[in-house]
Image (cartoon, rainbow, N blue to C red; front, side):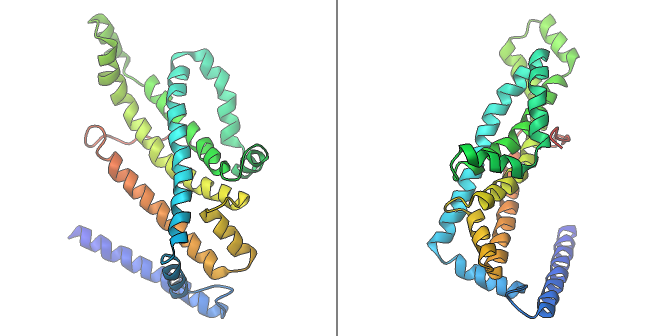
Length: 257
């Protein structure tokens, strides 16, 4: 019953804002200034019937997910290194500070000088994800219960078992939280990189060209695609990660916030 009520409330809220949008579109008086939701939906319906639409969406998705995978593969060993060796932590700290503090647009423009247009979104996704996963995994290692580690040393528990039974349960909540957070960051920053670089076969390029040629209907339609894909990615990843680790594991704040 609660679920049904929640669905009804969500639909009512959605209907309210769609009505506000439609009223604003009527007030604007032109689809070229502000298209209504039905206009955008109609344009989107025409787009999804083309093969180019799906190729563009899959290409953007692949670039950004590739950046996420590379970032995770690089961040985990770096987190172990900086958690185990304080000197390494101090050495890399300025680099993490620079990455967190520099505007994404600056990185995109700088990367465009050295990298191809199609590579920049991958690189930007790596930059967005690496500090978050790095910081969280490192925090998970440092927060491992010292009493458990001392007991393992006293009983000479094999290192492999210590890794699986002690470190992994400590790190896993931090890692999952980092993935949940960094996926959204990577997607938004990756699309922004596609817009600024006008990468071929990309959602960002479609948004840029729609803005350049004042195709407001296309601009809204592709923006809607970005939002829907972001929500779908989040839902799919959360669903997959919900089966990882012990049930009911408590969430922790991510270090990259």
